[in-house]
Length: 86
Image (tube, rainbow, N blue to C red):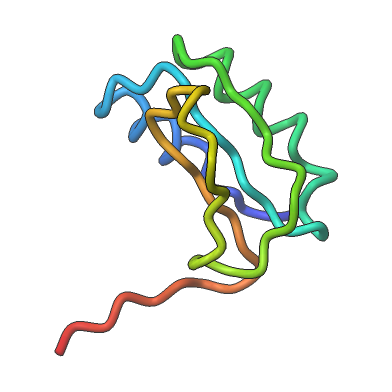
């Protein structure tokens, strides 16, 4: 139903040699979380964790997760996040 660009995520994980990856999704996409975890773990050496707390946009990063030693956070949203060049 959605293009979650999983191959791009796998590529980034491999490029960064990330071993602990945190997935953050808005409630409307959480039903896809299992598919995301399965794809990533089958195609990388990373362990994937899913953040089940709130997610209100790109600035809403979970805090206090230092103990988990997260190497990479992947944040999904319903809309494209545009980077504007000035």
